[in-house]
Image 1 (tube, rainbow over the protein chains, first blue to last red):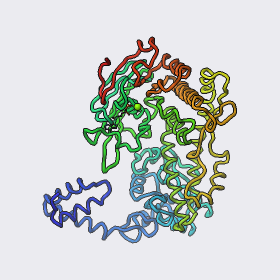
Image 2 (tube, helix red, strand yellow):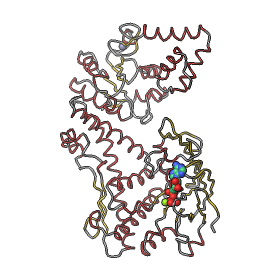
Image 3 (cartoon, helix red, strand yellow):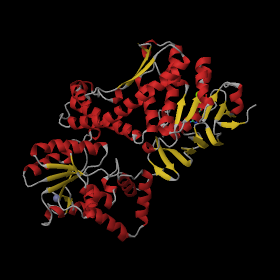
Length: 199
Length: 361
Ligand SMILES: Nc1ncnc2c1ncn2[C@@H]1O[C@H](COP(=O)(O)OP(=O)(O)O)[C@@H](O)[C@H]1O
Ligand SMILES: [Mg+2]
Ligand SMILES: [Zn+2]
């Protein structure tokens, strides 16, 4: 391949780092952006810049947040007696869409996975234990996925929280087996949450 | 269970094959290296969603392109389904796309739709080969008769991979042991489901194999047992922990299973003569077909790859009895007339040359 101008090459490089984007797609996207109006390209660049400048993670639950706390932790209307543990902020969005759940969250940003060098510290388990130890929490719902890593993470969290005496539950099966919570439809998800069972 | 039609595109040495099969006996003749095993491999692929012999799936791609297709139309209990497996190479790795009647399906959810029992020359070593061969025998049978078993096996492989990584990290002092208990629990949860399936299947298989064995070699008592994880599986895993950490591998679980094969009270794995081994293998394979038929209500497709010529008259006779009975059979042979005359007459005969079918003669 003839060498691309540096600016184009840089963009292709960056795009191909995105999940699911191979070198060919990255190149197509880069050329698409090159062809687009100046305004569109600026808007894209600005959106990416703003994202990192304005959005971070909640100090308490690690959900996405525009300030130190996320909108859910900040809202006075949520029950603070329940914490729902999920793998990613996208799971929070999926559960919020069901309008079934009124408690707080704890976002792990991953699952236990020795293959990927991910242990409990990397997924904010110590912070979860601290939140529960501080008191006021009645129930922790462990809503990690039903795949091997999700199940094992749930087992680990169950073991880590057992000494605190808090009630620990897992959403009912009925979630697609081995499937992602994120992709479950609203009805299935609502049913799984309301039909949760003790460990 | 019947395979009505097989279509291959750029699969191994088959560039383009469209073939309608007969409902009973199908015989494919060909010299060595012409594509007999490849043909049966493609049918096994439809049954198992993985090739029983390829180490890498890219091996299956023919010379025309980086893509291959295996399509089978199968009939079971009056219902016809079309299974399509598209293979392609992506960044040096094989990728598979599976559709059943045009609907996408995961590889772990395919087995069970087209049920087949494959008997090929490699199986003749089943008795004396390593235990992984006997585990594979159990796996290939169970994924076809128990919905969800393929998924269990893939979950187990994953938990094992994770736990073994963790063991090595613990040994290297890179991490503590506090998450090990959770992995152990998952290992036992998934592993004990596999073990109980295997235990039940072996208990069912034993008398079936015993009967076939008796018919071939009267007088020699065959006993088959399941050598699985300890009854206290969880306790066994826990006891094995420090050794596991030292070795960096998991020592207890169904990945260590074996089949106990005894002839007249002696371990066939150690003592059986070549002839005894073959009798045992034929008995096991016939019992496998019996079990699949009993569990599903239909005889599986029997795939016999060039094995008839390997067997002497008595063992061949036992196999031919099954071949002659109900059910679809696909036989390959390098010999011109591997079957007795009356069966040769019943068979639909084709000749294979360089990955193409042609009239014999
Ligand atoms: N991916 C492939 N592409 C093309 N030819 C292949 C491929 N894999 C195997 N072959 C060819 O298939 C032939 C072996 O076919 P096989 O079915 O094992 O023969 P046999 O008739 O002896 O059972 C060999 O000639 C080999 O070169
Ligand atoms: Mg062959
Ligand atoms: Zn928050």
